[in-house]
Amino acid sequence: MKALSATNYATYSRPRFATCSTAHTMACRTRWASRTLKRCCGAPFIESKRAQAAAERAEYAAKVARAQELVPWVRSLRVPKAEALDLCIRYGDIPNATLEERLKAVLKHMGPRGTKYEPAPPPAQKPP
Image 1: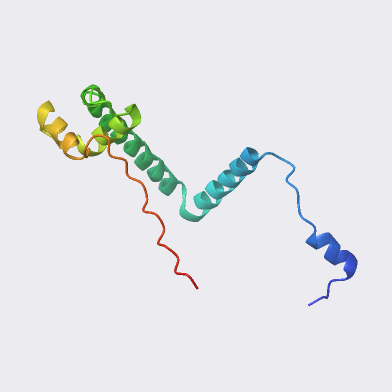
Image 2: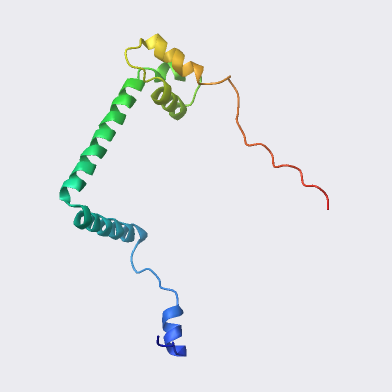
């Protein structure tokens, strides 16, 4: 192994500064990873993964559309919009249930009104 001289050490030890934006760097890394995966696993594998991702997105969109009919009822209880949608997606997606049954399932998981959940304070330190 060749020892590094002082000039070579200075060359290799200085920090490298990015010459392009972070977004461009991430895009290049993503493209490179995609090419490597395609070479390694083959194009059919990549296409099956893309189809699987598209199916998952469609399933989630269907859940959101089904939850939209519950959101106004939950919002009438002064629940923030994002929280109401999240609750309706998680707990209101019951197949073959009426609107009332789905709404009851969402309300069971809401908790008491005005409750704020905060982390517990750290334990007291013992004096030395």
